[in-house]
Each structure stands twice: as structure tokens, then as C-alpha cells.
Length: 196
Image 1 (spheres, rainbow, N blue to C red):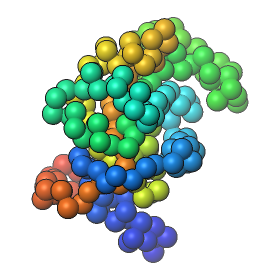
Image 2: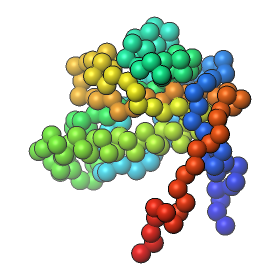
Image 3: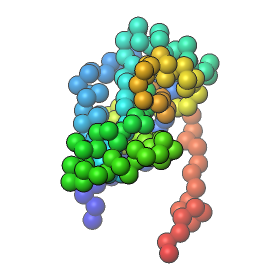
């Protein structure tokens, strides 16, 4: 019997929805810190942890973000209490002596090829982005992850003079369930999975 009870499964997976409209309810900084403190324990290759997150919360920061969001994502982003920019550091390997101390050669697995470093950063940063959504849902927040933004513009505005590249945006808040549309279907197990 799983210790992961039905209420937890519903909160994180079965009943969780992508939200586009939000209740007028603030998110404390403490909750944002707790999201990170949960997601940071999830696995990445050689503990490389390339994700970098900017929580866009203040009106001034939202005003910097909104010009780079496509029109169909504007209202949902403007009204969300927080929008997280989920990025990844392509020079994550510089931190491996600290993050993977039992093999001090690990940074050399990635620093010899920009292509390998970028692929590893994107893959593991994307996994961390998924962990981020799970952590936020576990803390009672609703999420609205999305593409649909000017990546180069976001990178210049928020990650200028760094080795960090944006991956996706994720609106956070307490969603207005009355505005949800019918849930879209998903594939059944036998359609896309095999047990060999």
C-alpha cells in the first residue's frame, strides 16, 4: 500500500489543473522559498542542479516582463500573483566541485563541449522545472506553465551578462476554479507505454 494517499495524489496530479485566471490572493515570499527548498532535493545528472529561477512578483518587475509575453498570455501573466522565469545555467559544471564533491573530475564531463553542456543544462533544468510545478502544487498553489514569450528578450532583460538561458514561464497563484474549462483528454497507458 502506498503511503502517498489519494488526497496527495489529487492535489499534485489527478485534480490539479493548469490555471489561466487567478484569485486576488498574494503569495508570501516564504512559500516561494519553500518551493525551492522542496524541489532542490530531486535528482539531476551528477547533482548538476542547473535551474535558475527568478520570481517576478512586484509591479515593477511585471512591467519589465510583460513586453516579452505574447498577447494571448498577457492577461493571465499580468493577473497572476507571481510569474516564475525558469532558466538554466549552461556553465552549471563550474559548481560541480561543490555539488558533486565525491568526484572532483565531474566538471570535466561537461566543460569540454558547449553542445554537451547546453544539452545537459536544458534537460536537467527542464526536469527541475517539472519538480518546481510539483512542489508548488504540493504547497497548495496552482500553476500556469507556458511558452509563448520572447526568449531573447527575457534573457537580455533578466539574465543579461550571465550564462543563464530562459526555458519557460510559470504563473503561480490560487486559481479561479470557476473559470476552468473541461479537462482535455490524455493517452491511456497502453497507447504510449510498454513494459518489456
